[in-house]
Image 1 (tube, one colour):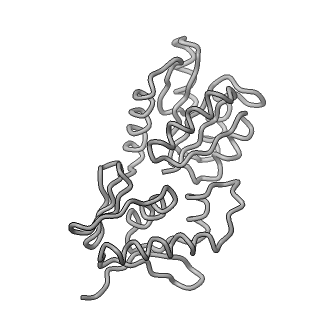
Image 2 (cartoon, helix red, strand yellow; image 1 turned 180 degrees about the horizontal axis):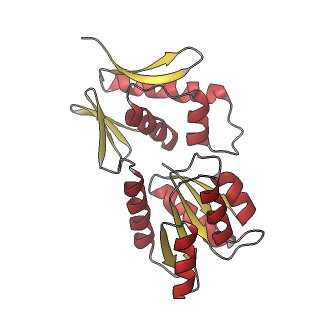
Length: 225
């Protein structure tokens, strides 16, 4: 799952990104409201963590503009001000939750999980398709007694495929979701990581394969017995 952190305190923003990445999230960071809005409008994020007081645009303005443009991505707002009216303003602007600094990381992580549940994302411990199970906590792909650990990029690709199952996912969508809006990753990088995944599926004796539809995209398919 890809998150966007919009926070002008660079040390805090980078610390949040590091911790979230340790919990298997893919994270992009912006340090001002204008960049935050531009990235948010890409539509590639599952949730956004946004500070209130920022240069160029404050968090209230960013969320209000997002909602006006029809962007419904869940937003968790952060602020150092514990004023009731600030919380009311943030929620009225379209934020989904409001967390006051300083906060415990476990509380932040719980809020993110709650937002993703509300959005309808699958936040169970596992995804399953065919005879393969993807453990979302350990990034482990398993079939029977065989299992293999996935890298961060492999895991995110497999999560997308298993969430969509037979539905085709375009290469452009994979690049945006896994490598990010501002990444300079090339198309063949998707093919390289899919090749890694195919080898790992073969290793665990999966009856699932990643099939390509030429010029359209990729999808999962259960092999015929």
